[in-house]
Image 1 (cartoon, one colour):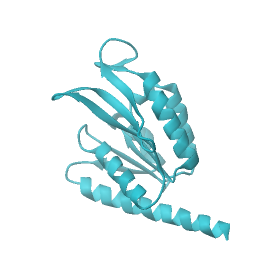
Image 2 (cartoon, rainbow, N blue to C red; image 1 turned 90 degrees about the vertical axis):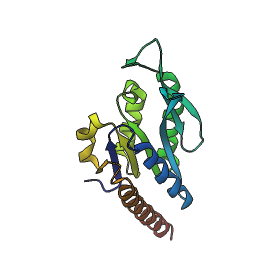
Image 3 (cartoon, rainbow, N blue to C red; image 1 turned 90 degrees about the horizontal axis):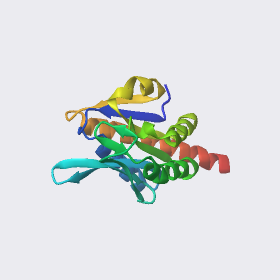
Image 4 (cartoon, one colour; image 1 turned 60 degrees about the vertical axis):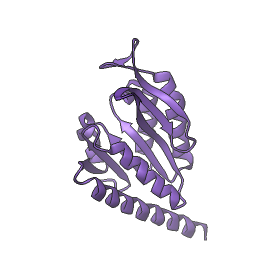
Length: 184
């Protein structure tokens, strides 16, 4: 099991994105570089009308999906592959080159409509960079063997947050110390 990869899954609305964002923010506060993407709901009043993707390092925003007409589709959503790729692919590439931690929220069916995302994800998974990824529940079995896996619930949210945060901090400090020793 790869000890530098952390995969989080759970039911919709349980807090996967919030957990990923909280960990990214904490790691940044420690002085490490965090890159990658976060996806967020777009709401019109009480109704979800789509999803946006946000680059963690620049804050750039793109549209992942919206309710409307067009292709490719996933349920009632049209996937805006071009807008998604314009933000997500450079953000993931920068994280691979410059980041201490890569965050990918989410590995899921909407994102899989992008061949470029699949290529970028493959590069991330072949790298030795620490990774925190949220995984759609349909893809759990595909990613479980590739790292440490957590099923998030309202009851264990804080414990999972704390456990992953501690492990990532330890890993990044070890990497930092190894890098400092190599420079000596």
